[in-house]
Image 1 (cartoon, rainbow, N blue to C red):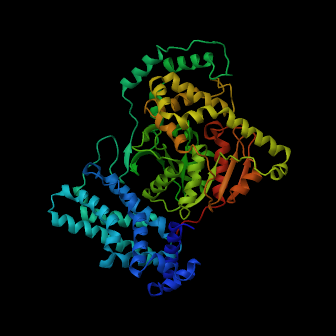
Image 2: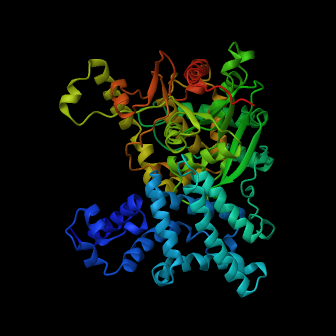
Image 3: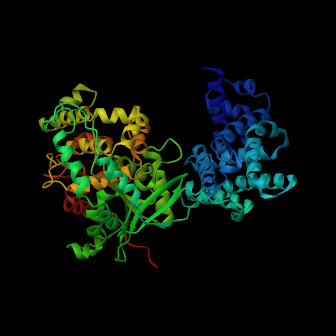
Length: 594
């Protein structure tokens, strides 16, 4: 065992001793016993009690404040969004090391707070705490304060964060550490000291301020539509075969016909008006703009439900199910099955626009959507999604289990077990499904690999050519759609084109592709305890149930349909609506008494 490893082990042992005996029990022998090392090991590495506490304090302090370091690096970054980000980062970093064990949590905080109060430990804490104070001074300096006032208030912020952390987490019996509560407390401290009136507005990029939710309406300039029509009129078609052949990509015959329909018959303004018929809003979360539909039911006990699309999907994917889900009374359903719907454009997609930084994985999007539901005041809600929306919905259950009642998905993938004996246990139908999944992955490996490795290179082509953007979407769409011919009489061409328009008009081909770069290393999803319902459609990749239930022990319902594909909300809206209703009907909780 290296010295570094043993040091880390002894530090954890010190925390365990404090958790069980308090600070008075922090003796070398107690730590040796807890760590399972030879007597005298602690004194060998930590000659004095002070040095041991220094080591613990350094470790904790680094975890607490490292994430906030870049948030307030310059006065230009001091905006409502960065205040939100700073509070969230501090809260998240704190919770990283606090953990769910209340006894250990209290012990760690006691070590941290005692270390902060002891003059002889200031040296150990100085590098991290001073770095945070320096950024806090940067935040306060442009506010017309004297140097003494800046120093006083910067120290006040730090001490209040120490105190509020302790009070919020330690002095709430039977309440697990809660990121949202801690974040609100830290933000309140920042705003109380800085003063919200002294925080400048966001740079005007159409982004909402702080956590404010702003109404939004789609209004594409006519010049953008004229430019599109002009580009469609002068397409430079590639040389090569001109027959109706899909073997090497989108059929030239099909794409020419669809492009001409787009140029001469498709009416964007009609679809713009249709989308504007649903209430829309934007808000800033984690520095990114989030655009969403928010359609509330008139039924008093409707359950909030957040619907997440994937790629190359959009909010338009859900327009056929909004009415039946929000107003079942008028669509042949039971009013008790009503939902309030929240339908976001994923960050990087559509009117959410490109986020300002990298790292927008499904996990981070789930964090943002949990915050969105909290801002909307929804204490209990469900989640539903397919494609990327499956991962986002699953992570909502992982990250926000106290508020997510259930997760319904219409995409679920399973892989062949590595053990030949386990593989041999599968019946013929399961074996066929595994082979179909392998074929599915092979067939669509091209677009996934390109978007995972070279999204920026791809963006140059798609941002400049509307026909290129259309072909990129149609090629995948055909492969996972029930009506693979994609003729006008079997597939709604207007839907295909509206989806394409939401990528083209917002110039988000590149930013939407980047999610595959964030997810390029496929790993098993974190386990969830929130009930999951699965809907499987035959023209999509279908999971093997017995393998899925081993990986996802929270599956409580499973429905196999005889028709439909990947974009179920558009292809088979009635089937999907019925399955969503049935799943949540079984797990809805009665409303809280007023």
